[in-house]
Image (cartoon, rainbow, N blue to C red; front, side, top):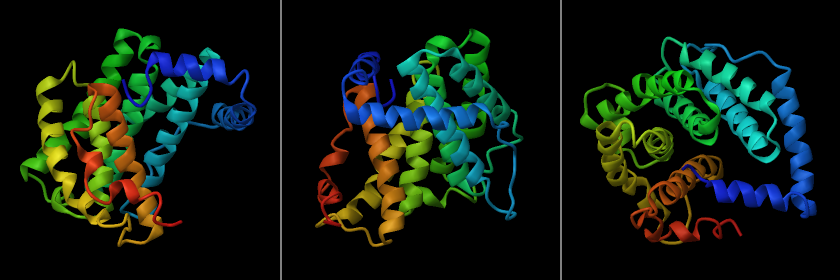
Length: 253
């Protein structure tokens, strides 16, 4: 449902056998996957007293790597290692919503794991992943849009926090839309409105006033969310046509 269909993964698996660039990338991906297999699972760590973000990003990176490798190669070791990573994060006391980027990126990680490996999980495993996403991510995102928290200010912001938070929680909403229709629907309805605020900042020529580093962060999450909307529900509701957005990739050139 998210970013790639069964047919997309099947086509990629076939192309890897004949495309020299894809073969080169697979070698690097496999090496990264092996490193993940050999490393301990992520822990709940807030080294600066504020951010869980490095942990959230690590879980996301590992889940994407392992999920993609499984879809290409079919090795169950990748599924088992992904489960260990996600199970550990599901048991965290929270995903640090006071710094909501952390919550959003962890929800993104769980959405990818839940969706890309859906047919490999048992019913009990799906329940663990779903409950974690709902209780530690999606419900808090809805509360933010309702104005019920002190840390939901990003819903009205015009910078990268909006795209990352709406995009990360939005991935979780799309992953769970069939089993949590009211909760997912409320979040997505609000996110589609909120996301227009920062997206207007790309006008008129694709520039981003936070500079290239935050341009990368904001635009990456913006694109991922719109792509997931397209694969999950067949449309991005016209968001990609907001003036300036299509020029964002050309602006640095």
